[in-house]
Image (cartoon, rainbow, N blue to C red; front, side, top):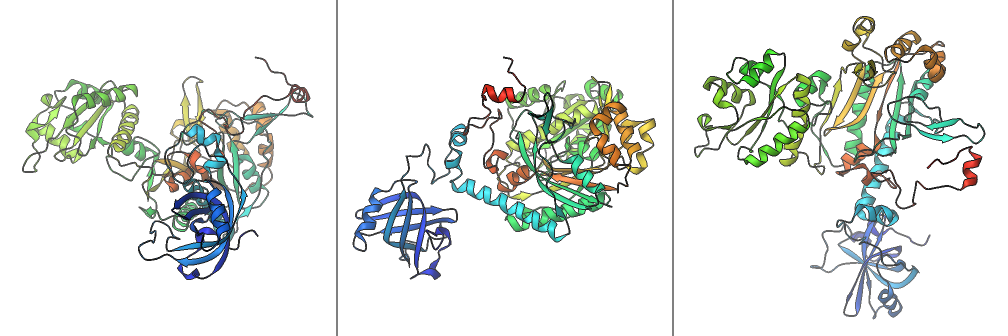
Length: 596
């Protein structure tokens, strides 16, 4: 080895020890003869002292080095004098006095500073990703990812799970997004697909009798990108036989608690994780991915205003709709232009308008209900105003925002406004170290596709109905619930799973309901249907997204910050220049030609 110790592990107890270090020059400072170098490797940074009175050759070499030069240093550890200790560094109590320094490799001036985390254009960072990955923030993120994956592997292995790799080249099947297709050279005109998930294969492993399977699986989806998506991503794929919903959820919850406690210093807000039925989540939060770190829940005031003189509210209630709102604390002083901005935001989401009520502060701190600023209270009686304020538990200084429309429209719009107000109030910082998990259960098994005039699975087409809802597949499919469960963390879905269909007849019924005729189903999923006739056990699983989970644990704004070599929002690799054109001969071998 070219080094005997790592830079970041040296401490006061090592004083007097002779060491050989190797790494990158983080910074160099010349203090009138003595040169100080901050030497960096993956473990951290230590200060090197090159003194001409101790070793002139090392001092001369130190004069030559610049940022990101790769050097080797031999010397001894000594404690720093009192008053010169750097409390910002774990190694700040010591320094290494060089008695030999060798430049292993010089470096060009990097396009951005490595030694601090100042903002750099992301395109430049991705173009020089190998340099960006040297930065301490990125190294912390990648090491956190390593720790999370190792913890997962250890946790599941200790509980009898077997890690099995499944194919990357598989068959194209509909799973909700476009497949990435790979043409076959040997079989002209035929294609493999990169798996969107190992869903079918993990179910077949249950048929094969492995009972407890997991995999850190690479998945691929050709879909439009956003901050929490990538064309290729990683998930923990997990499947168990002879289990019910509670078994999978309990195991997953224990795993998540273990990951947070072992790998981070984050605070878990609620254990056991709260459970919300899908309908409850939509009614209270306006989304099936609720951020429960803060309140501002949706409140229904339909009964309070049903008989009011405000025609908008009354007509909506008479028509079977709902009047609901949220209470934003401390926002009563919003200007008219700020309220107009919120109104426009609500209208962009489909609202016909936005009613509002501001409860001013008073000198004695009491609510002054007769002095509210409002767009509608002049049409309400004092009793009705009191009822609205009581329903929201509105306090002096609060702003109430109200939408009236069909229930699902109201929930969706208020859910968006709730998150918008939380962002403005600083309640959803991605750097928040509080981790608020919750489960969402009892999802509808199907969603109606008006354009296609058919039912679509709300999760995926292998999700089993709730046992008591099986009969609804014939009489009322829209009322059937799936044995699905989503795990949400700080308003982001981090895992989704379900108990699977394991009987051929039920699976064929689902295919029929979603408009997949039997012949097409056999063509796409014949291997699964046939497998279901050879003694398939009841089984279920879940698939936490590794990238998204680590992103939240690291306090990062998007998953590109926790992936070593990510793609851009346009699914491009700026470092390598992918995707790129290929040689004509390669296309001919694959029986392809480009049509411009």
